[in-house]
Length: 321
Ligand code: AHR
Image (cartoon, rainbow, N blue to C red; front, side, top):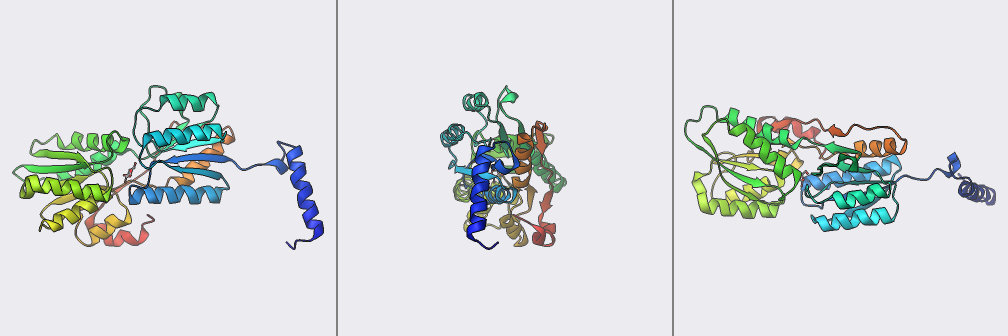
């Protein structure tokens, strides 16, 4: 549209009319969403942040985004600031499971609905949030366990497993461990000989794997990493120790990010269980539904699969993260 004195006057008149007539179509203001992200610890997290930012822009939702750098106190501060700013909806991916009740009660008292994305909280009061959308982490652990049991079904002797856990106290670390152990415990030949956190990062994954290799070296048959980034770091450690990843040590991880596909195509990672970070579109539609007064299910589970290295080259071009 050409900007003339007349169009300008009309636009200004509409704007002032909108402020005088709240509740009319003219006055429709953007929904404001406050989102507190865990951090930027992994390829998965970067894709998740990108999905949330781009979906908010597409949905016409104003996003107030805060990065907690893997610290719960930063998330609590961000949520309090969203409450003070009177945002319409608060969403967050809780870095750890416990310790949220007080701040969630503050949001409830301020009548600001809360959506949990990706990770849940461990609270007795589920009225503190509207819905939790994200993966079934216990099932992801089970998928990893089932794949291993099948792969090693003809192995007679012990299978020594080392485990790289995610962030201590986080839902994916607790649940993936639980699901994996639930499956492998059926056969006593499977033994987790070492288990330590690598905080979901490549650097820590490498560092902890170096320590595992120093302590147990050739005794290690399997690595179960709670995410791809730690597996990728560990692959480096295994190569530096003069061993062949995915051959001398079977490697199982979770997420199925592009980096994992590259490792599988290069023959260095055996399998990755899918955990989708593309939660943005679902979150924006939930935010709109909440504002429109629609009821939402308490739990929205993401559907996922598993990718062994044999299918990696074929699947890679279809990957979105
Ligand atoms: O909560 C999802 C987990 O967090 C992903 O598996 C991991 O990569 C991320 O950091």
